[in-house]
Length: 319
Image (cartoon, rainbow, N blue to C red):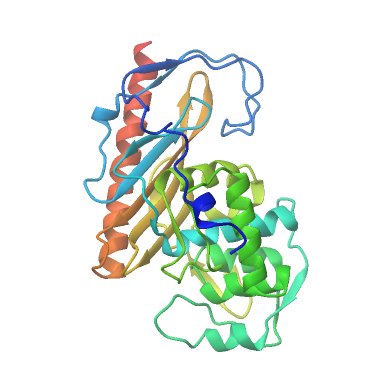
């Protein structure tokens, strides 16, 4: 790793310890706000009420964080210590790829040839893969879809090799990007998240989500319920919360050591504009089975989203 353990895991200045989970009023500037769900084209906005943390329907298990983007620091529950995040690592993989090779909405991007390693990995048991055939070519956009929607580990690692020549070199880019985003308690050791040594916290994952969701192509992909890829066919998003009103992403992840993990985004009316409500739920039912873990994460995420959305809506109508 290019970064020392002390640097990667330092506690961020006591800010979280001083976070007050009370009723807070934040005045939002009437200037264009890049954190709004509409991409920063906001009009005059009134005060935004951030709900009492004690009334948020937090999961009892693991750790969580939520943030109404542009209105202050995340609210948290549970000890924010690094835990395995499984396929949530692919959010960083996609973010790094799109930073290095930006796409416009609807643009397919360059063609990428499937190498023998990616094709071989399609038949490896015990992890989530997609049926890639050696010699076939897919666009950058299609491989990002295969990485984020059905959570193809081999597609993620193929993108890493295409970008950097090797997965190890790509991981160094992931680590540098995490450091730039202030993700001080995150460590990336692979592009797919299969390694239990890829760890993070709910707060750090919200930081990443805030940045990744600024990219319109990333937003399009993670909001897709399904896509059709040539020679593979229709693929369905592993994130069943996309059926919940307002939800526009982002990613699920599960493994036995990680439990169930969910990084989500929901568009909510707030202060005369539409804002992104972001959340992360980590380490749900860890050390059981991936299916138990992900089911618990999805259920916890749904309760958080619907509870917060309803409270924000009530606060808006009461003003």
